[in-house]
Length: 118
Image (cartoon, rainbow, N blue to C red; front, side, top):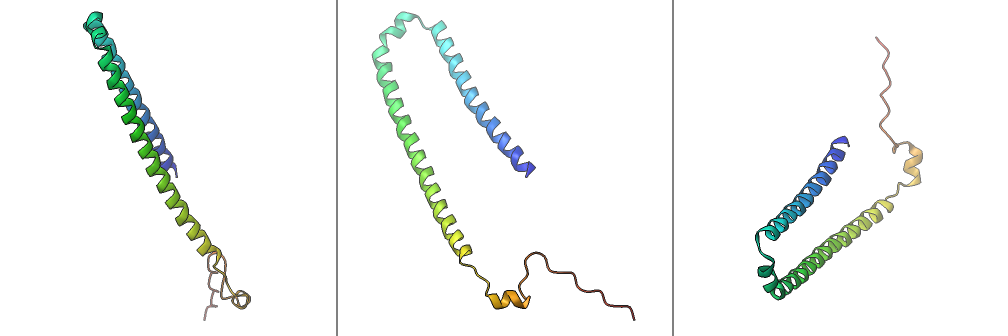
């Protein structure tokens, strides 16, 4: 159980490092471009940059929608399997005569009786 918790922590930390590192790299790239490229050069390309950003936004939205759809389908499939399993376990029944006979026991089997020494 402890190992599972450690794995979850590593996954969260790894995700934060990847996302945070990516954001840091993009921020550094923006600062570098703003320092090295003159403002007049960037102003001439505003229209093109707007179209490129719009295309990137739409592409991101479509990919995100496909990911959400795939996860939702997997969730629905898992719920269906879980419902089937719960129904099959719920239909399990021990007849009363078996319960009364002592053949069916809950828990671990009883220890065998010690035989007296000869």
